[in-house]
Image (cartoon, rainbow, N blue to C red; front, side):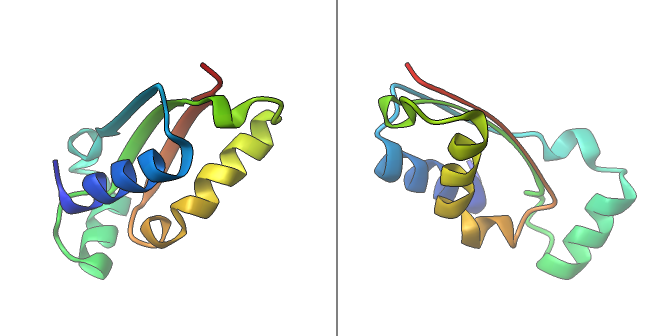
Amino acid sequence: MGKISAAIKEKLENAFNPSQLDVKDESHKHAGHAGAAAHAEEHGASGESHFHVIIRSSEFEGLSRLAKHRAVMDVLADEMKLIHAFSLDADTE
């Protein structure tokens, strides 16, 4: 697990105490992509640029889909500045 993946996992665990958390680095799928190359040039060649996160937490109870996504994005504000693409599947347990 890379530095950015680890930071995402740690922050989401601390903020939401999830029953399920999968942080998938999908950067390898985009290695030849022009956006990935530009991202690496701008942010360093860590290779971590594309992520898919699945999170289940009781903290999302009663929240709309948009509110769940906003809550996650708020927690990951610093990491979002360092990555090119992020997809999220957030729900209650």
